[in-house]
Length: 170
Image (cartoon, rainbow, N blue to C red; front, side, top):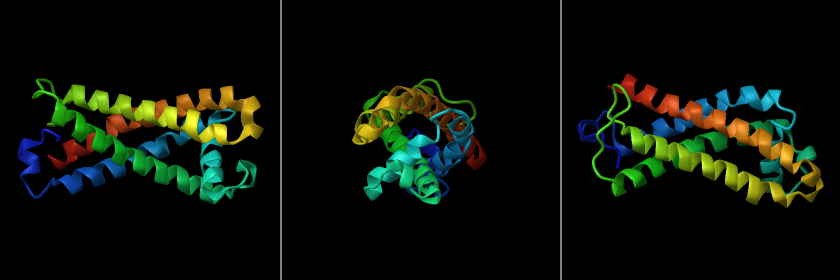
């Protein structure tokens, strides 16, 4: 569990509040990740590919509103995933000595949870979702590279928003 010893025992920051915080941070990080997504040659392809997998249609035939909605929903879910990983790591590690400035968020746990989230995002999309479309096989390399940049931006955003929200709640 998060080492919010004081906070977890207060009504202000319950476990469900921490998950909501992760979801909101994930949504904001998804918004930030739009910057590289829309500037890279294949940056906006991943939401269309994911929507294509969910609808069983070709990514080029996916409604842009659906792809955009899925992008934000995935950002929210990745924020919740980060929170679950953070809880899991903290439950397995000794009490921390370093915290993210002004919060009770263990620095090492935070960084490890961000790394696990990044590896999951990149690996799941690149090697489970994307290969479902052979029609894109000529672009796999560029799509993966652009997704790597976008996922990096997402995780960096998450890495800033989570402690930022915690500071607001203290």
